[in-house]
Picture (spheres, each protein chain N blue to C red):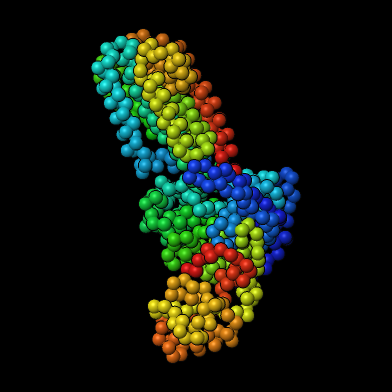
Length: 323
Length: 277
């Protein structure tokens, strides 16, 4: 379906100007190799700056890689970047081209530019607007919509004019749960009906765990792991996560709490600990008894998330979102 | 655990049924491209609709600026050739304001903000995007230019007989200036630079188009000859006479058309270059 081999892209170093510091050369994509299978929702997970968008821009023919191979449905995208537009629909993060159009016209125009005739473009526009529940705001310019609504309208434009591959760069940013469900329901319908493949860029671990079939974890331009979310989580199966929230501050005079501090990642009155199951059990017993319990506001014990996987794999940046 | 294991290879090795592509055996068929004219129409319509949201206040500014200049110049020039030059220059200035200045800004911002990605990931010919947008911006200028021309003619007591020539002047001067604006916007490395170049182009059209040519110093007269809007101004100014010299009008408009073709071709090339980085 989509095959990536040893992809490399380097941004050249820039010289500093007044007020702008110089930046060294950056390997935004550093030897990436991936296989996306037909009909799956494949995710690229990583914090901001991991190189997700740069990678996606090379897959969509928007950016030429320095080296490596990209093949989509048997077409060489590095040699023929213009073919990407005829194989996939892309929802980027920037939508300035559509901002001043109404939702309906943005969808119709995109359909026309995707090669549909006027009648097809209009009927698909109506279908997609209906499917995503955009009817009430169809006549309003994107600029006047809230962030989540605008994102949903842009997602609608990506669906007009069926494509076998959808490349979605953080499609649900700013959306409320209703809109998110509409997005994933629309994606599921297309997978069931046409075997549509989805390449999803995200930094949201909860979303990654619920919607992805397989996920590649990116860190500074390299794929540090690639498996199903469950398969990845097996790698840290020996650990659980304990979250503690103290009322005011941690009761460090309690020896058990003071001992736990060494393992905790502190954010204000919030502690997060990755522990072996028996250690966690002991820790819970310690903080839910006596003096420590009086200072405790809330605690949760959870099996590892993809964020724990990311950290266990050596991820350094704390840029993943749980929402 | 929700892994879907589907045999990818067998699906992608199917023989192409429709649009066969040489040199890529076993590849999936490609969706059709958008054709030049329908895509151009779709871009034009979308751009025109933006006017309702974003452009109308600017169109008023463009028109009032030109009318204001004519009112000012009324105290300076006293009829005759100079009055014709002022009215024609002010009218074409509206075209320069919108087609050159605003379009340069639009493309500059679109390019800097990643807005071109949207078009670049659609199978649309670059010429459709550039020409559709340029045509829409040229269309925005129609009401302002017509109002300016009528008000100016009344103000300076010029005949309204040949104002129909605007039907040729607006699209041809529009093509030349919009092509220049689009090329500047797409070639400028930064959006601020695109804005600056657009403003400078418009200032040049103002200075060199509205002020009567024979009062300008010699170097500026040469500069005037290099500016495409000049030929639109000259063509329009000639038609205020009782017996316009039509071949000269046609020649001036032909220069506009030629500049339009060249600058739009450059803009299309610049778009292609800007779309894939």
